[in-house]
Amino acid sequence: MNKNKITVFLDFIENTGNKLPHPTSLFILLTGLILILSAIFEALQLTAIHPLNGNTINVVNLLSQDGLHKILTHTVSNFTGFAPVGTVLVAMLGIGIAEYTGLIATSLRLLVETAPKQIIAYVVVMAGVLSSLAADAGYVVLIPVAALIFLAAGRHPVAGIAAAFAGVSGGFSANFLIGPVDAILSGISTEAVHLVDAQYEVSAAGNYYFIVASTFVITLIGGLVTDYIIEPRMGQYKGENKNTHEEPGKNNQLLSSAEKKGLWYCLMVLIVITGLLLYGLLPDAGILRNPETNSILKSPFISGIVTVIAFTLGIAGIAYGIGAGTVTSDKDVIKSMENSMASMASYLVLMFFAAQFVSYFSWTNLGLITAIKGSDLIQQLQLGPLPLLLFFIIFAASINLVIGSASAKWSIMAPIFVPMLFLAGISPEATQAAYRVGDSVTNIITPLMPYFAVVVAFVQRYEKSSGLGTIAAMMLPFSLMFLLGWSVFFIFWFSFDFPLGPGANILISR
Figure 1 (cartoon, rainbow, N blue to C red):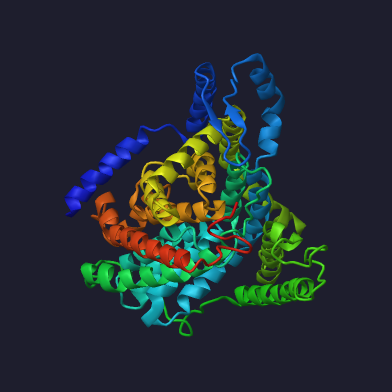
Figure 2 (cartoon, rainbow, N blue to C red):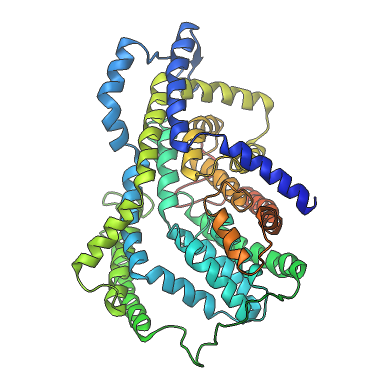
């Protein structure tokens, strides 16, 4: 496929995607559709037999008097009790402090600029993956910095942009730490699995082992694609921009004295916090373990991992800010958290309507009936768990081309696929992991991704004639190799039945 055909294809995708409603409007429309379908299928007497208890499941009409009363009395509690809302807001308080004080930006720059030239592409990709902890930092900080670093190393700056973009967006679901995306997806997964099992809880750490290992997979694939496909295709850079990035130790320093002081303060705080966490976890009767079983897996520590992450990042950010001079009083800390909450306004509006949709879907029993009948079909086809999960990866990757928001897609898909695959013996954590693979790999080739235009602008600094087709052609090898390599890695993980996270297996026994 040549560049012109890619451009035509992407124009089609862009035009199709632009015709879709705003994600929030989509949930409003879907909620209205659920109300209408509940009345229709109740009149048609649609039923299903619950495979676990043998009870007959009937459709509940929400356009009835009882349904209207339930909607009026539960609208507020639907939102305030929606699992993704509180956990994400708590996580963003700590992340907001670390981002506002400069800790995240400085750490990314230090990671990228101190790497040996021979492995710079791999370091840039990994830094991009890790940057997803702070949603925008990778796009606005790492991508332009990566271009400068490649230029300083005598390499093509656009290849640096490609490597950074691949890590930031294509590896969005991998990381070494648990972040907001884990809280969002696990909360939605919990709400979804409650359609069939009200006691099942999906922890924010439910995919932790898998995403840590995936970080290395994405780093290796991204680095190889950069070094052996992308940069050789570009050739030597002959643009107007010259290397103005000086080597550390010459006329400029990698970090200012204030930034160094801030990092030292941060390091000392992290050592203390790590020591306290180990003190609470290592002894058999540690205060962070389950007080009844002394277990770590089902302990307050695991259940409250989002709080731990938020607290650690917040304190580390304050320590860095004090040392670097970006925090001069308590007002700066409060402002950082206020700014973080302000940035979540669109997310809160989206989650309000997503919460209503998920609740209505649950009340009508349509989700449960769909899951039961879908599970029966799956069992008749006898595809097996692995083919089902691989199909779901491809399905999620395809949907991602027209709906950009990861939380919006999962809010729509989870109430159907999580219960359906759960009844087929596949854990919610495994379904969620498959979704994360598919959702990540096509981020970098769809113009509907919010920062796609920003990447185009960064590339045009070095190649003025670049456009959407240029970026798509540049990123397509990453997307295809991520899809192939990550899927193969998923097969490997499945084959050895490794746990996806603490206490989270791929298959469930019922």
